[in-house]
Amino acid sequence: MTTTPRTTALVPLLREMAADPHIVDALVDAARAAAPEVARLPATENRRHIADLLGVGLAAFERSTGPGTNDFAAATRLGADRAAQGVSLGALLRGVQACRTLVFEIAIERGRAAGITHEVLLEGALELDRYVNALERHVIDGYHAAEAELARSHRDAGTNLLRRLLLGPSAEVPVDELARFGLTPSARYHCVVGGADPARRPEPRWPGCGGLFGVIEGRLAGLVPRPPAADTVDPAVLVVLAPAVPLVRIGPTYRLCVAAWQAAQGFGRRGLHSVTDLAGETALAGRAGLAELLSDALLGRLRPADEFHRELASTALAYLDHGQRLDRTAAALHVHPNTVRYRLRRLQELTGLPPDDGSQLTVLQTLRWWWALHTWLDAPLTRPAR
Image: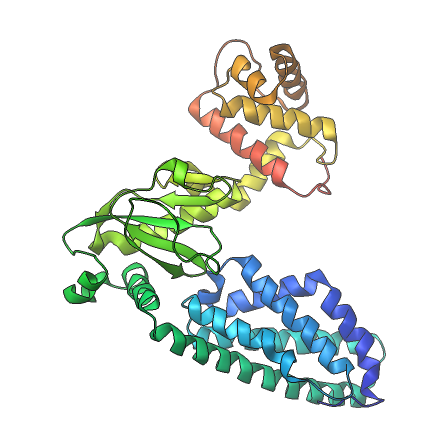
């Protein structure tokens, strides 16, 4: 790809696009919508690769000599990462092509709005298309190279087995293949889903657990005959553990673990958690629209950017989290119980929160207020009060 004096007019436009976080977000959404396998990966993983490729593409377009070998290192890494994460090549290319289409649409729309002629836009689009074609070839090459390397490794053979157990019908896995990795069809196993960096440590250091681990859908996952002790899990990392089940039930159990892990991540949980202990968060996470309605209805008079209002909401949330006990809430917040009582009274005046008169909220009242407070505290600070 070689830029011409005419197409250099496109450089400011492309530079602006590469620096626009909204465009990166739109490309992430397009890739995830085009390929469900890509959508199962953490959104931050998609965003990192797309931002890298946008930046490299702009740099290559700005140079008159065209892209060099190093320009495609990010594309090669993308292909290799997706192979290691178990994403099919077809799904990967659907995501890449969805981003390609959207980039062209946005560039043409903005170019027209900026008054760039059709001839310059067409010439620039052709040059950009040649670069993207080369980029896709390097994505494919990186995928195939990583796939071949994975196939030669015993560990990755175990990951392939684990992927089939968790994502496919486990009954089709031969008994001798299970035995190769220490698994028994008649035994029961705990499914584990973790948030550790799979690129650095594919197996957690949990003594006495045994089991089989691998990177599945961008997350660390595994089957263990014995659950890890809580003190062996990094407290900064979220790990979800399911009760032991037979291998024939491990696929649905894994999907529940993933749903619980995603919900717990959204609620800020860390450390080791049982999937059953996260049942409430998992159920609530599937109703984001209802959470916003509830937050608006109960807390509509609060101003998200008001630090005092946020202090009131945080205190009420801590109060519900500590069994509606003033002494426990005060100890957790390192304040006097009278301070907690005052903040609850001020919040009650603003929102109608039931008063602290010695009677506890019902289970459903607690659920509604806890969910509304958590949603409100996580909302953007720019959201207006009613």
